[in-house]
Picture 1 (cartoon, one colour):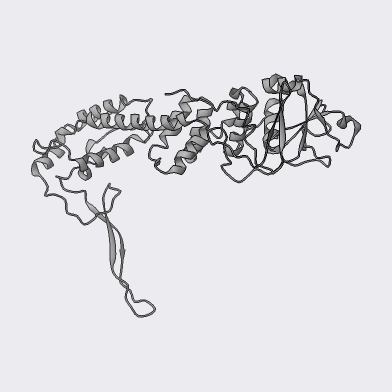
Picture 2 (cartoon, rainbow, N blue to C red):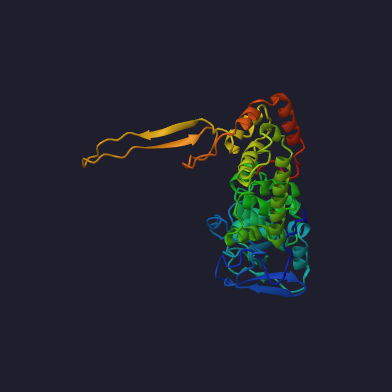
Length: 394
């Protein structure tokens, strides 16, 4: 697969959270450079990630306006950072410099830093204050991850993507985020939020997780523009969308190969040896379901592939009437109409009323005569050789 490429750090776009407030904020980048970003500036989805849920609210603060807890005014930090929503964090410049080359340059640059005149004590007023364009929630999570204590799992994709953007912006090693995305990258989360997990895995350069998430997107329509935009937005890379199409194509090719390798000719007469396009389509649907289980194992070929429903030249499976409404007078005196729904056993589709072709007696004999144990063994051999890298989950 193409190597997942995270969005590159670009000085003209200072942060993901630009626009969370209407204020103009500055981010000193070193060597006398101080970039300004207005709240009205919008970002390219290929670089930043928009909120995927309800906007994050500001974190709790002390009376002095500091984030409550580890980074409040009682901290021993030697500098103050201020979020886009006006909340302050007293942090240690050494911790930030060791984690980020950008912050290292920022603290080493010659230009003086702004002091916070609103601070209540002389000690705090003497500390340099750096205004950042991330929200207080993002900065709180970011600083906690950089410090030895206070680390915890990230529970929302909204915050995860904002952290990813902050890590890229400040040139922090993204591998440090992996242990804190465990819940977001779990199997249950992947099944429920495949688009978000796919984008997150791509940014983390986790090829295995990218492939896993793409399995649950196999039948998701990518023709809708918003779906394509979400893939690019979450991954930060147009190549992620191209890779998703490529993985989907590989699965279709693998499925065709699987179907072609099945020993089904023994279950039909010579006249009807070849499957019709309609039968092939129905067989592909059945194979998808059969291969989607954790450890598929064939014990009866006819039942495993629901051949009586797939083949159009044999008798249909027994019909089962699952609902019948009996006519009864209504309050107005009118009677309700009788109706019923009939489904073929083993088929997810209701009978459409269209008659099947007359059953071929030779096909009926062939369907009942093959050596089941031998053919089951052959089918299981085909299943065993199905490419694991492509995945059996469709």
